[in-house]
Length: 397
Image (cartoon, rainbow, N blue to C red; front, side, top):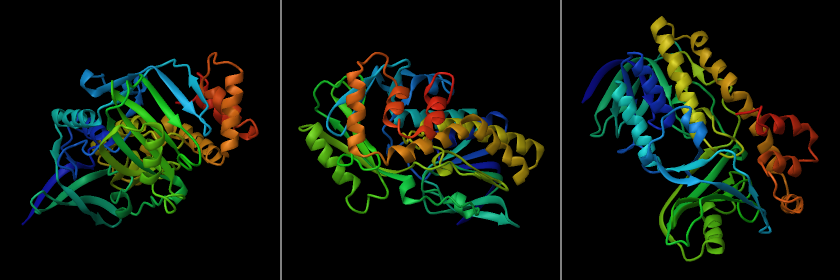
């Protein structure tokens, strides 16, 4: 059975970027479908779930049910086991993404959007190079043709929607991290601290992490550069890390996936289409963090889309306002993160060990990321401006 529907906009993907975009559009009185292939928004969780509290509060009012743990400190481990502890000026939180993502989607529905779960996007309606709608397949296999003036692609790192519209979103292997994570229980009391582990034997081209989720539970995972994934899997690296660092813990669940660590798309728009979040490669290339940029991109896309719909102008020229707004907001800083990522992944283990040794010799003091990067990359003077811009209080995002 084939049915037809007509709306102002369809948002494909109900992650943070998609839900935020749908909310902004619905608040402006637009008729919006928010489409997701999953049976429940936020499941499965494919994220370490850590985020800065102040950054998050820019977009939403925090709810207690979103927060699994409060973070009071950060510790970095060198390949030889030496560690340094960062002074925390702002607290972080570990989210419960199932609850957080679900509530964001509920917020879009409360604003007036219609949420369609277990619904797949199977293609775009095109007319002379302009997107005119989307083909959907519902939970019972029914085919739905939806005419829409605008489509927002929020369908994650594997985004097909952007490619269907002719946008090149290809990722080089070095610009994707293959990640694996266990949710673990039965651990010794877990301090309110995020721990990061570096080294070629730990996670080549990336890092491992332990993020507390409760008194005796944690997300324990790692990401490796796609360049290394063909030699040994991320899960194999993770199993070795768990055996060495948290032996005896209970592996209660496992997730795996890819994270873009590339430059954001230079052109995240086409006639009748905007691309947001991981689909637009808008994560932090240095850390892989994507929650804050997804919320920002969703807000910007929703606002630009609502204006374009009100003006009845869905041309490239009109929608390019989204790209300019992204560049002004986070885009330029995220280009700097990419340059730093390219330098950091080339650092040998000996340099990382020497960095930890040098920082410990100077005493902890007010150790922050600025000092860490300045010490580790002291032989790369061309990156000093990037480091200053990103990690001193007056710069960066």
